[in-house]
Amino acid sequence: MSAVATTVDIRPGGLWLAFAQNKLAWVGLVLLALIVLVAILAPWLAPYDPLEQNIVARLEPPSAEFWLGTDSYGRDVLSRLIYGARISLFVGFVAILIAMLVGTAIGVVSGYVGGAFDQFVMGVLDVLLAFPTLLLGLMIAAMLGASLENLIIAIAVTEIAPFARVARAPTITLRQRDFVEASRSYGCGPFRIMTRHILPNMLSDVVVMSSLWLASAIRTEASLSFIGLGVPPPTATWGSMIREGFENILDAWWLAVFPSLAILTTVLALNLLGDALRDASDPRSRSR
Image (cartoon, rainbow, N blue to C red; front, side, top):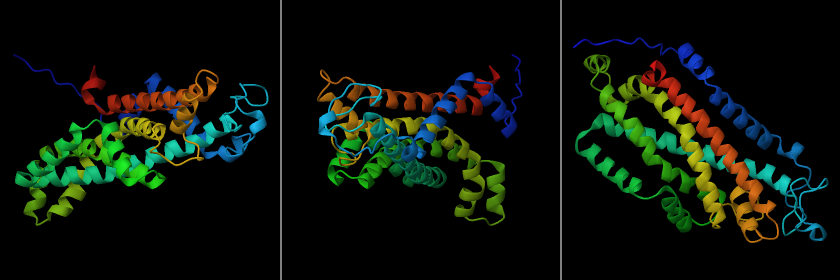
């Protein structure tokens, strides 16, 4: 039996070339860039104050004056949708950043130390992974209470275990490599080996997967806000807007439809971007 060797360009330029050749990647990148830009420029793009109430204009359908209509308090839906992007993206980004830092640290330490410590950590992570993400986030948010900070903490905790799993697997392989053994023989301590030799060689896997988990974090934020465990009103978030629209779905369809489309578009963009990054960084998928 003969083996066929395949040479794959894994240099940064090769990764970028593989990403750039993916048309769906550009669709996701452009969509995400537009959504982020809208969130940043919210004070200049929103036609009205998102908190300004106008009872006279309550439940107005989409029109030339109110492009996406108004809610039950007469607030402009478009303005609230634009400002809601700020909260949803901020919560998602910060929660994933916290989960990535904590989860990666746990995974690297657990994989490097091994033994009983690794078994204990993996047992705890398995318990966390046994709970559906939304259910775990709901329990944590319910215990902490509804606020922006507690919402971020709840979502971050739900995503720590997946990050730890992704970081642990390559750490177990890397700790047995020759360059790590050479570092030990030269007197390098565990902390230096983990931060200088192991972490840089597996960080790309964590960063690539973070885009996919960011989509999950945004969905979780919307779900928790929908059931009243997100940012307290009257602050606009996409999830809370859907909840308000659900109460008037028969009379004012636009209240729930437009925030739902915003979440759908954001999650789609992140999934397209994440899939493209994963394909570009995976030699097996790139060689096919």
